[in-house]
Length: 272
Image (cartoon, rainbow, N blue to C red; front, top):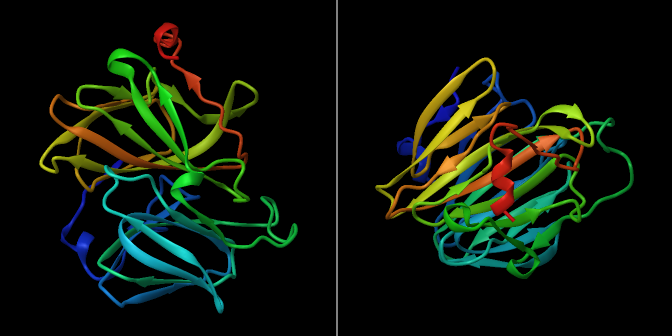
């Protein structure tokens, strides 16, 4: 199966460029695309059955919902500033107007009566850098920063979204964990997608994707996307290269419960 979606020449093409769509079998609750706007360009989102989250990767833009200006977002790059984002429920129009060349990740997830559609009105939420919760995890070669953009304090239906920053030589999603089974309070069932950026961009990251049915080692480069429907999925950054990934989780619960590989759970003794 194809777990890694390689970047292509369309990644920086103007307009909306789909990355994870409905034409693949591994991920059912997450769509991902990249939106590129030049100065003065605008793009309108309104999906009748899916919630949306637009995460600013770089640039400067104004966010408008209906006739209301919600605010501006700006970011030099993912490695220089915390994220800004705009979350919107199904059926609500959100417009992005670029003040300079702007790149955004566009995340969509289906909403049904089962996971909250029709259970009260929800308004778009502009998430600013000061709203992003930073969690420093691990010590030594497990040290990394996790930035929570959408946690359970944001009125999303399915989504939990954030960014992880691996310093050169360090590991994350470690000790190896999974979240593929609805078994509270031990484990939750969540699909996940990673979108990677590397600095300098000619670098790479390494991942191990494994469970009882498979064991794959993959090389991930700048702009690649990894699909994580199940299994353990640690990430390693080689010396000299900083590794960033936008992580997107969706499942029946908004309470994430990660279940460690029991062979490696002892690592938690120095991963606090």
